[in-house]
Length: 130
Image (cartoon, rainbow, N blue to C red; front, side):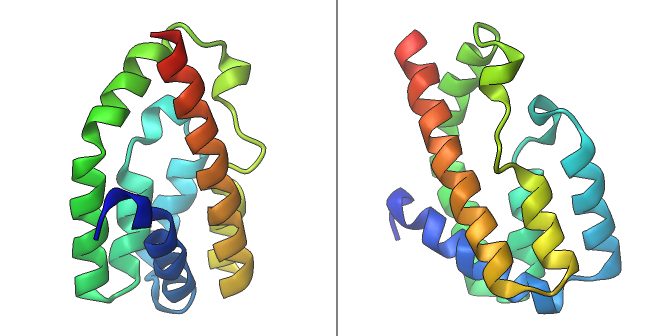
């Protein structure tokens, strides 16, 4: 797999997580979603990948997230230059958690897709500022 497949893999992982997540992992996701964006890190997506309970999928997602570390590093450098409004997302982690909590696979997958699209746009804006 290549990095461009990460969004599709995360959408599948969140679909599976809606039925397979443990109460403890759901609680951690809820706590992470309430934290400021800068403090959430990649842990949110890692919990979802692991909660799919599909080892190969989770390992592939983790591997691809490792490969995207350069992009994350560039984004981190640019975050200090961006306003808090620019870092916020109308489709952040909260709607994803809501879909998982409700065991609504398609709702969670759509929330993930919207979130990843906005994240891609924020990364592109951040890179343009460097």
